[in-house]
Amino acid sequence: MAENGYKRRLAAILSADAVGYSRLMGSDEAYTIRTITECRQIFKSHIHEHDGRVVDSPGDNILGEFSSVINAVNSAINIQKELKAKNEGISEDRRMLFRIGIHLGDVIQEGKRIYGDGVNIAARIEGLAEEGGICISGSVYDQIKGKIHLSYESLGEQSLKNIENPIRIYRIVEESSFSFQMNREFKLPDKPSIAVLPFTNMSGNPEQEYFSDGLTEEIITGLSKLPQLLVIARNSSFTYKNKPVRIQQVSRELGVKYVLEGSVRSAGERLRVTAQLIDGTTGQHLWSERYDRPMADIFSVQDDITLQIVVAMRVNLTEGEQARLQVKHTDNLEAYFELLKASEYFKKFDKFNNILARQSYERAITIYPEYAVAYSALAFTYLLDAWVGWTENPQQAIKKAFEYSRKSLTIDDTDAWAHATMGICCLLSRQWEKAVKAGDLSTTLCPNSADILGLFCITLRSVGRVDEALFMIEKAIRLNPMPPEWYLHELATCFRLLGQYEKAIMILKENLNRNPDYIMSRINLTATYSMAGDMDKARRQAKEVLELYPNFSAGRFMKGFPYKDKKIIDDFVENLRKAGLPV
Image 1 (cartoon, rainbow, N blue to C red):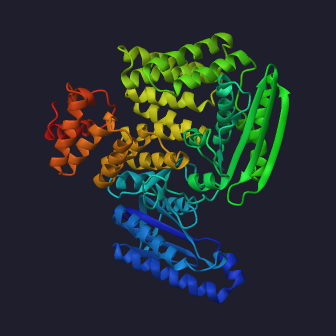
Image 2: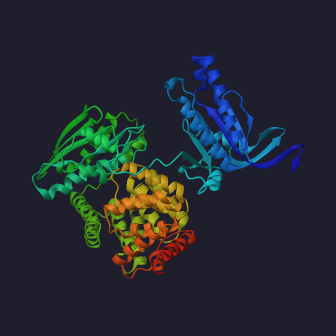
Image 3: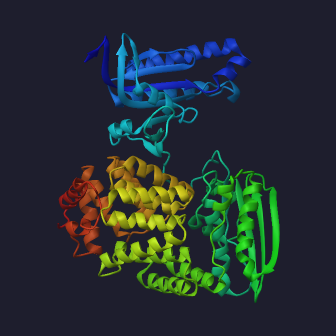
């Protein structure tokens, strides 16, 4: 419709801006002009190739528009790929990197120019992108999810300058970073990275093992709250427990720069803790300390070690981050010891030990009724009952999990595990929006907790946000490089939901090589072979399922799975039926 010579329409807008353009001009004007001209040509070539047009390219800015959102995103990806190749071999101070923002919105056209909020929002989104990166609005994401197989990181709702309402923003991860193989080595990340090895129990009493392990885990928990770090999960760092290892080996295998090791000796009311931080790439000792304290000082020792590690790694903290770094403890050692005992039971992950863990958590709460961490842990034992099938009354178990999660949050609303538990409870109760909100908050509060990221993956893929779920589980595996089976199962599930059957099959086969009786992956592999059209292999897997569970029913198996889109369940059941499993 024309308004005073103007036309309004919907368009996908690409806005790009060179990083450090003024600095480059100041250091070498001729080189910068030549380089920006070459870069403009790269932009124009890919924009035209994807049926778009360059609206304007003043200075170091480039504005393009497309009638297709998919074309706009594919164009941006190819542009960044070519620019990256062009910058290889050029010193970092002479590289020209671009940020790109893409938005689908209303624009006003006057001749060949376009104006309006659609253009303004794209320009603001561009400013949120990393150097050499791409950010998109929620309207773009909604159009491309499931159609372009990328990984996406949600940046949440962002308030943009001169834009009235917050805009949902996603960062594009160009391609899946995960190529699974055992015993692989990781590159060092671009931020401080650390593995905390299990502190050695020097007390001579094997029953004190849980105490030294607890100290290690508290330090990992504290560090995991800081987004400036990459912190390896307990599951991976504890694979080195009671083994002679070289620090450089740990650094290579886990892909971290720093490694913390130490020892604990407890005798009566006295405590001796030693700790040392080592640069795993050079072997240099950066910090060490010995603490001879009363047992009651264990919590201040934990907090001091955590803070000294951060200082030694030269991480700058705000006052709020310093407060978050400190784990909120009880002053009651008896309650704390019950919590540690409960954790040891819980890690064995079976019905009987889950009950023992619950009883210890309950004793800890009886001793210290304001113990937030004990309430959130107790909540998770009930959640497992419902989730894994360890109870005949799952609804009652979910009700208990809700109750204790809420109690934990009334005492400490920064308890990431309480929010994570609440999120899965909401998911199982089909409260989709609440599940996502709680899961998102849990990962914000503890961005380095691999398990919490894995749980949020389950929520995201269940509500249909599979690309984001894939990003979450890949990040979890980076934090936990020796992942438990359920991580790999979730990774394969994401690839299956995205139609990437070969990747899903490869990972499921690896999981079953590790544990042939892992029935979830066996069933998943059966359905995935069927979806991929390989019916001979699907039938062989179905036979294996029936040998393990003679009374298996596909419909009964999928009945409790909380997928927002019922078609996913129907398709899964149908492919199991085609493979020969009873419905």
